[in-house]
Image (cartoon, rainbow, N blue to C red; front, side, top):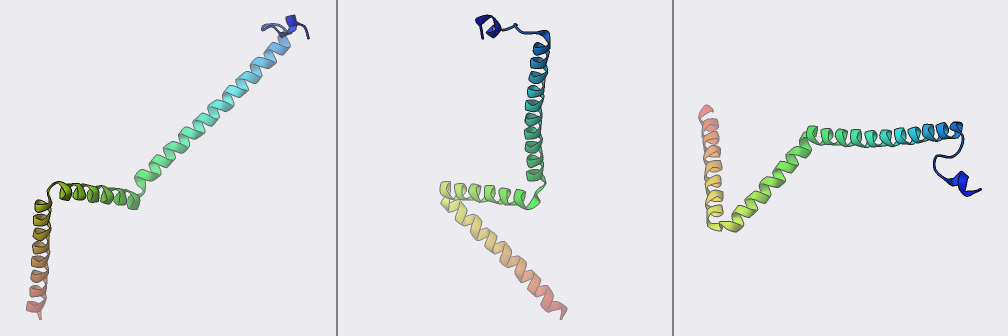
Length: 104
């Protein structure tokens, strides 16, 4: 080939149209691939949002991390909160047992 045929803009109009059509097809395929990837990402995000057990697990993990951080910063307050929770649970259990015994 000569240098004249390698230069851009050379060749017949038919070859140029073929190149343009092929370029359009390549761009369309690339757009389809991008759209599919975006759609898959959207579906994955929706699945994560609608997966209640997974969301519950995430929230429990966050609460545990916050509780550990609170206990690390304020160990005395954490102990007081734990004792308070035990007292409340014990009170509720005592009330339930008392109500069950009184019904008999």
